[in-house]
Image 1 (tube, rainbow over the protein chains, first blue to last red):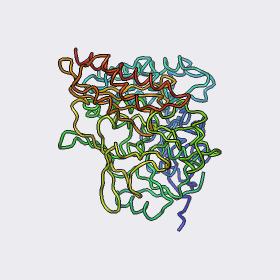
Image 2 (image 1 turned 60 degrees about the horizontal axis):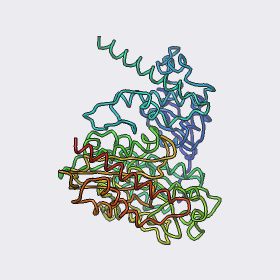
Image 3 (image 1 turned 90 degrees about the vertical axis):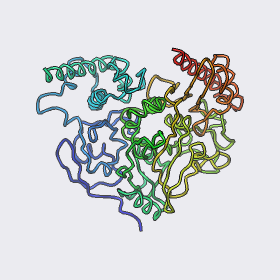
Image 4 (image 1 turned 135 degrees about the horizontal axis):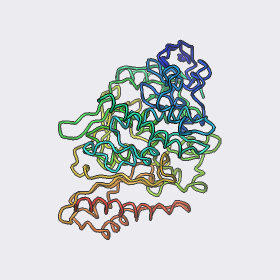
Length: 185
Length: 330
C-alpha cells in the first residue's frame, strides 16, 4: 500500500508550539518561511553549502534546508527570531551590530545562529580542524582568528564581510568570558 | 522531489521490518547527503524510515581496549569524544576536516559510510552515469576528472569515495556491524566497498535490507600517534583532492608499526598496504618514506587530468611520516 505522503506535525520553535500539516518533502527551512511566516531564516543555496539557513536544533547548529520538517518534530528549534530577549539583543547580535559583521545582511541570521553554537562548542572543549593538538589533555585552544575562521567556514558571505564577522565572533567570545568571570566573582 | 512516506522507528528490529516490507524504502539518518540527492532526483525513495532515534548513539570502550561507535552517533560527537581524541586522533582530525560544523552535527557515522560520490556526472540527472543509470556510460573518463580515482577504478566508473572519516577508519582496521532480519553480521571495512568492475551502481557488500548498527575499532597503540592531513582547493569546507591518515611507531630509528590510508584517490578509502610493508622494520628516514610511497603509487593508473595526485600523495606520505617521526624522536 502506498504510504501517506503528508502528516500533521507539531514543531517547537523558540519555545512556542506550532501545529501544521506538511507534505513530507517540506524542509524545516520552507516550513519556517512559507508555512509559519518566520522569515528571519534565509534560503541561500538550498543544498547545505552556504549556511544562510542555519538554525539551532536541540541547541546544535544545523542547516534547515537539509532537515525535513517532519523529522524535526519533537525537537527544539531556535531561529534568529528567538535569539534576543525581547528588545535586549543577545551579545552575539550586539557584537555583529557594533563591529559591522555584515554588509547586505542576508547571511547574517545564519552567521549569528552559527556563532552562538561556535561559542557553545568551544566552551564544551571541542577541537577544530585547525587545532594543533586534539587530545583532551591539551584542552580547548584559544579562540584565535584562525579557529574562528575554521569554525565559521560553513557560513558563506557573498559580500565578503568576513574580516568583521571574525572580529564580531571574537568580541562575543570576550563578552561571554567576561560575563562568566563576573558570575564567578 | 518525488513524494514519499515517512516513519520514525525506535527499535532496530522495527527499522529492519519496515524497510523489509517496502522495496522502495530507505533509511534516513542525518539526511545531509540523502535529502540533498532527493532534491535533485538522484535518489527517489518512496518511503523514509527515520532511524535517528534508534538507541545506537553511544561510543563505548570495548573489553579488548578498542572502541565501538554506534551508527547514529553524529560526526560532531565522534570527533569530540575524549577516547577518540586520545586513542585515534587521526579519526577526530579526519571528521573535523570534513563538511561544516552544521553538517557534522547532523551527519551520522552509518550514513557517512554510505554517502555517495560527489562526481559531477553522478549528480547531474540530465546526463549519463553508470553509477546512477547502469549502462548509460561514464562521461568523466573523457571529460572532467581532475578529482577522480587513480586506484582501482574501471572503464565503467572513475569516481572516488568522498569520505574523510572512512580514511581514518580504514587505517585503523575498522569493522562495520550490521543487523538483518536473519540476525547480526559484520564486515571489515576493507571488504565493505565492492570492486567497481562493471557494476559501479553496487557500492557495498551490505546484505539487502541490512541496517548498519555501528563501527568498531580494534585496539591499536600506534593509532595514538596518528595524524590526518587533507589537501583541498580552499582552506576549509571542501572535499579532498588528496588526503592521508598516517600512524607511526618508531623506536631507535626503526619503524615498529605503521598505518597509512589515502582519501580521494579511489572508489573506497584506500589502505596503503604496499607502503606499510615497505616501511615496517626499516629505517624511519625521508628516503624510506619516499620509497614506500613509490611502492604504493606504482599501481596508480592516471587519467589525463588527475596525474598530479601521484606526486601529491607521495609528498603527503613523506611530509606526514616525517612529522610523526620527528615527534617520536622528541
